[in-house]
Image 1 (cartoon, helix red, strand yellow):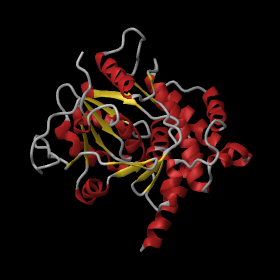
Image 2 (tube, rainbow, N blue to C red):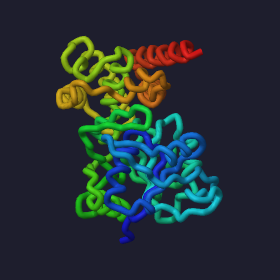
Image 3 (tube, one colour):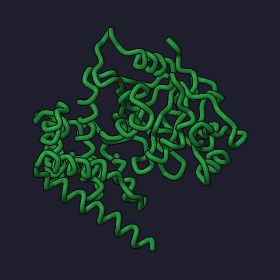
Image 4 (cartoon, helix red, strand yellow):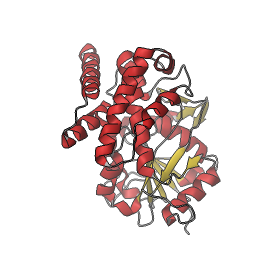
Length: 325
């Protein structure tokens, strides 16, 4: 089995910087490439990023075109394909990121998408081929990003794997990532039913992220205020109904499990969507409520709560854009 020795990452935001900072302490820095161009790439080269107050200057590769990626020292020079290619961008940048990272893909490259939602793996598989991809997600990482500074208290865990994983019979791709995560100290899980695991997080994001973004509230408000908690649960319940139609494994009891899980989160924590709203950025509402609404139409289901959340959050985004002029 070929070990993972080189890592390329596109998306040096909160999640990307947290996990890459850990990886860089276990493998040589020259085996790491951050794919970033323009002003963003120049800033990373000059100022680096900080994670919990520690500065990191990761090698930066200019985005390459298919067949001609760019190396850190000489734009236009080829780089070797990565053993592991990680996507940690926002969904709105995924198509651009796929093209930027294409030159880092080789025959043996394993691709992980740490994006929210349930659509990114299909988009990447269509672009690169499903043979490279493993499903993955991030749970319980409370990273907060301000500028190029990230602070976190909980590293969380990365569940990953094929759609179905049988202990003792993992695919070679799964075994390679498991060995690498163990070596670099990234907490991980390999669920037997990875699709259900993705949809459980999707349900939590649809409920918690959207409600927190609309109402401007921290985790403790969802936990302690009954009307807010009920709204989040209602949005999550609609996800369960869509999941049943899609055959992705969610059941009614998962809604209560989601509500209970909020009690275990940092009460002062803010969801990523709330952070986006507060920063005046476009959110990921289209891959949460937007996907629920789209799939509900496909199955002729009614999802009024998600329709309302989608429209209201888009309105908040539009107001912020209008106020910026």
